[in-house]
Image (cartoon, rainbow, N blue to C red; front, side):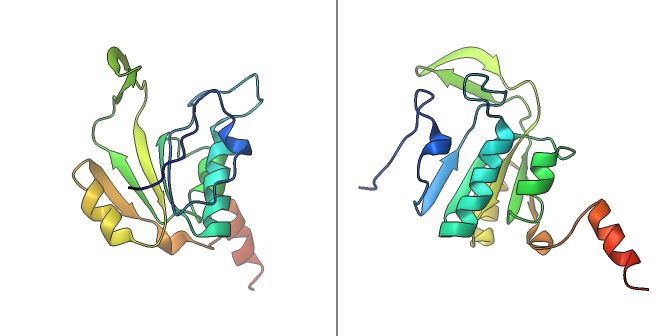
Length: 151
């Protein structure tokens, strides 16, 4: 039997130690005004945990490729992304389908070393893209400024 540690909304998962071999994260999609956190903090925790412990991490998040948190914690950090075909995911509350769906497109982001396994599992659910070639790269405007230095 595998050991599972679950963080519920009652706990502050950002304050918990994430030193586990495998982690699944479905953060709040909006701001947590009580704690002063947003999805940016959760994605940063994923990227930092991967760097520190080498954990294999799956994160279900809204697609927002134009945001700072994607640029900081996904591009250049994660191994792969699955852009889910079903853009209106439904969530259960207390085990019941209450008809609520995500109002936006979602993706599964993967930090880990086994891209082939991620691809094999998630290709059924969406377009799987290997972004490992971005790891450690400067992207966006920073890259352009670096090119100007090499005259």
